[in-house]
Length: 84
Image (cartoon, rainbow, N blue to C red; front, side):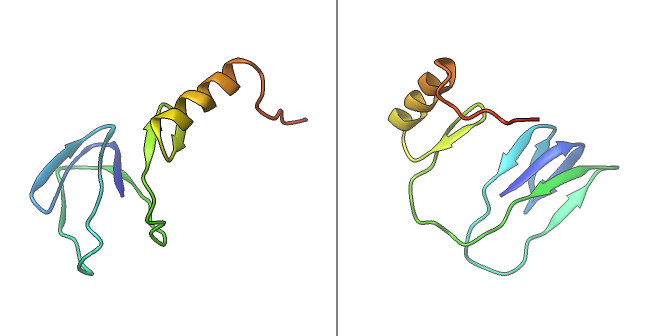
């Protein structure tokens, strides 16, 4: 996955700007990227989990039902707190 944090780039000819992302194909070992001026990118890689992915805001789960449960848990204080 490639996320454009700032700037304007093309990836395999597809234009991407600030706050846009592109999910790269697993096939192949190279990608063509062109920057139009300075750009800041976030590249996320890892072993495929071969599971569905659902996201909403800061929450990433396997289904929309799990997303709704996570939001409910967060809104009702059921998330852990971090001690200073």
